[in-house]
Amino acid sequence: MIIVMKTSATPDEIHHICEKVKELGLTPHVSRGVERTIIGVIGEEEKVRVQPFETYPGVDSVVPILRPYKLASRDFKPEATELEMKDGVVVGGKKVVVMAGPCSVENRDMLFEVAKEVRSGGATFLRGGAFKPRTSPYSFQGLGEEGLKYLREVADQFGLLVVTEVMDTRTVELVSRYADMLQIGARNMQNFDLLKEAGISKKPVLLKRGLSATISELLLSAEYLLSKGNFKVVLCERGIRTFETATRNTVDINAIPVLKHETHLPVIVDPSHGTGKWEYVAPIARAAIAAGADGLMIEVHHKPEEALSDGAQSLLPKKFRQLMNEIRPIAQAVGREL
Ligand code: PEP
Ligand code: MN
Figure 1 (cartoon, helix red, strand yellow):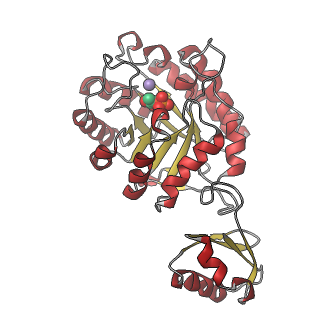
Figure 2 (cartoon, helix red, strand yellow):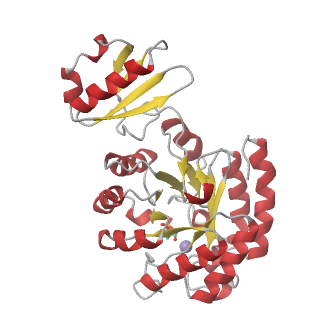
Figure 3 (spheres, rainbow, N blue to C red):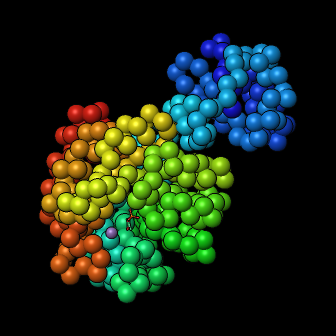
């Protein structure tokens, strides 16, 4: 439910409505637009109906949100969410953000090597999995807490933020201790208990689209996080399964403008998992920025042929730097910066 205020509504009238909403045991969420202010109401809609909000001074109308996702929708919050991280990093602001690093944290030295390169290339987040969701149980599963320690130490050394995957409700607290942003991977997009736990944690979350999830399903998963009071959510298009086998997945470029239309949440694109081949990473990264993505997630490895996971889709540091230079004018062409 949203309460649309009149253009002439005074700050006192807006405040009064918020107080009334709270009295009902609900949470108001104020969005101040250029034209008018709207108040999104979180909680049971039934409770809002008993109060005749339409009759209060300053109120223009009370409108139900018809989309299945409520808090994630643009109706609820028309202006784009700008997620403020530490060190002045903003996800969803004018500046495009780049999260880069190896697929997996393999050891301290390699992480140091790759982090140094991505930092000098202009990345603001260091990515790397310590808990890895591998298709085969015989593949490298990640270093666990040891990997988290390396991530924190190395990221701090280079002034980077840490984004890393959490796979299990039991490790949300542990991963939260080391990471600046929790990644919920494609395979766990509909792990509802994990979503609830990450929501409760109030840590920023990067939510990746499931392998065969629709955009609506992605937004409903985001809704789980938001409904627990965690609005610090970034969505990630990482390619979906289609009939095409020439690439690992098919990046749904359409999803970028669709998501931008449907939701206020920032949207980034992962062309590494999206294509599965390093040769295709740069063109799709450029397309993503041109289509309005707020950022990119890129896998980088200094020795891709020796990588313990996803070497084929990892960029050499030199290629990463080149990509960053290619993206800069594209970002500027669409009113962004890098
Ligand atoms: C990853 O980013 O490390 C990863 C496993 O990605 P996805 O969940 O998109 O497959
Ligand atoms: Mn990977």
